Image (cartoon, rainbow, N blue to C red; front, side, top):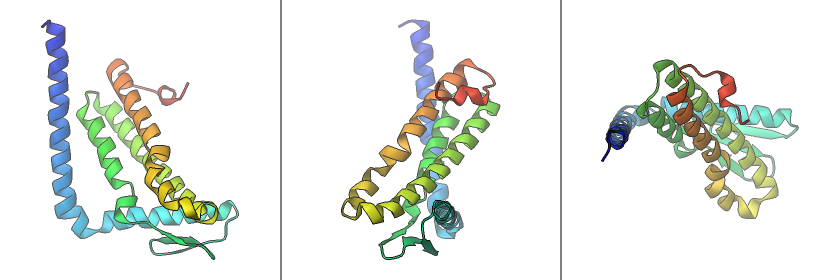
Length: 181
């Protein structure tokens, strides 16, 4: 085994240990503090409903909301439960960024950009759920089940990829480093 192989192995072990610690702390914090308190989950759910309603209204839809429910008159409502507010994905994304090597400034940029992107994608996802109740009622469950693969995972994987490249090769990335080109 060469020195380079040992170095790579140490980075992998370090990443795994950091990720394990992050996940453990997150689960304890969520289960014992955030979930019983409920304000973070409630805020995310209600703000997603509000933003989805506002954007759909701008697009010409006659849409209503009541607490965590979003509905188009005459069609089934969409309810934003705690598991649908994208908080778990935000934590998972953040854990990867925190666990992988990089500078503090880059880490902060990628955390802010990524968490914001996940939030916006969730708003778009919830908007699409409401529209799906109109056009794809019979396939709604299937659409709901596979929606993370359509909305979240491509962007999150792209951002993780960028983090591993930019975080390692470029000490201070610009926003153009995050472009798709």
